[in-house]
Image (cartoon, rainbow, N blue to C red; front, side, top):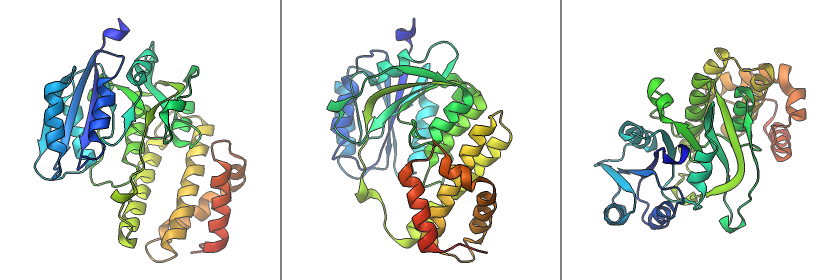
Length: 318
């Protein structure tokens, strides 16, 4: 039976004492009962370990706990969680977020037939305003578009449910040393290797917090994030070139790449390091500029931002 299948929830933790108790409480409040909680402590030096130890002894679910002595990064922590997983399904929760009681149940309910990926919408507002609605199955190409689009389920891993057999079969893991968009790369890798469908629910059952204090604001840190995102898009482009995606999905990918390059060049300015980006953007604009501004996958405010940066930042001519 569907509701007897085990779901492994992987939670990477790093100095999360402020919100961790709320996160774990929301997991214990799940309506779905076949849950295995996998907590990876990524070298926390605050009270996180104390909170985790208390939860291990009090939770109504089976809890696996692993601790790194030194911080390894969220990708390594999540990969360790996948290594320790044994359930039919795997999902992720960040340690400062909370999920509604129906979150896991909704994800599992939608994982029927040949559906390879289940997803819900997310919210950064009050979850008491949870929007309930119907679900629909998307083809591989439409799933890919939804993952890329700000209007879709986007590229997060924590609002999705994955079939563990595919994670193991295709050795799908988070790429280490990527500091930005590692989720998007993971989801695209999964979708394109599995070549399956995604069922998308309009329920908003995952509440994520934007923790600005954890983001380094220095120019060197921002440059590292941009370079990381550029690498992610480069790797996804390689996957796309070998995929069975339809022309519309491929077009949307390049439109999103244009949006990123436009932002990156505006933030970095034109220099030797950004020359390759400028050349690529010029090439893409020659082919996709009109479709970019007509695209339903690009939000109006994103199009306006593109124009603003284009005017303020110049033409980026190599």
